[in-house]
Length: 300
Image (tube, rainbow, N blue to C red; front, side, top):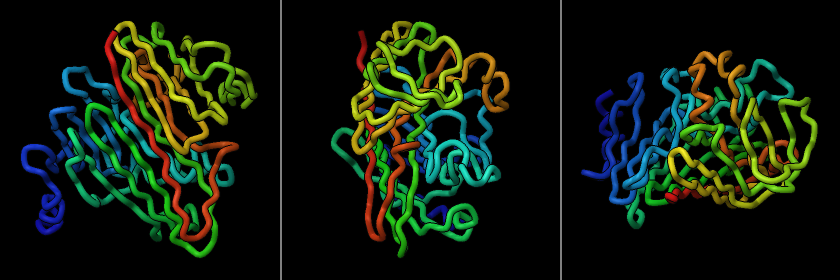
């Protein structure tokens, strides 16, 4: 065990990035730079905190999140792969795929301008092949700086083509969801998962008043989140992503979630950079696909 710890600690940057024990005894990388502070767990390569210098926490984490092996962390940025939601042909398969509960490995921790980039990876093994036969490697680079940069790279390491969905399921912390507005999706068609997957068109800004679960289709535009209570605007830009998911469980669904407090739906909204549904991706052997999201925050 000591050698495993030594192996992790060799990645540390003294005074800037350290590997420490987090909630539930799970290991995480804690980063402190002049531009931002943040944390990412090896469990699921799960980003749980990003706090730009001089600003409040940007990500939401549930107070009831269950920090244990085999369970996804509730909040932060879970990685959904290789399917989104339930697996169409296997109701017993884990929701949102298997990488958000998998142990990832650190590839590198490096200075990057005023920030630090933490790179992690995972790959196919006997356990993943129980659910999905493909050979793959998944790399994830998170740059903690005055902007938060997320880069997810899928490589097909097998001999046959593979088809997958992917999402960076980011939970954004807000002062009060009822006062929050989301823009950047006007006139975009979406799948309404709360209404039998009917396709609809967005008109104007998104206001959350009840359970909201939508997949916005064929959209490459940046999203703006306006939060008058916390007096900030969050901007989410993306690359190589053709869908954006917007989710809030609303009061009724929140009560049914064991790892989510009844009133926490007021404090969060998910804005997910993704390629899902009609925009699932095909990768030929040896091919790579890289999806990026860049989050920035400004006051007003």
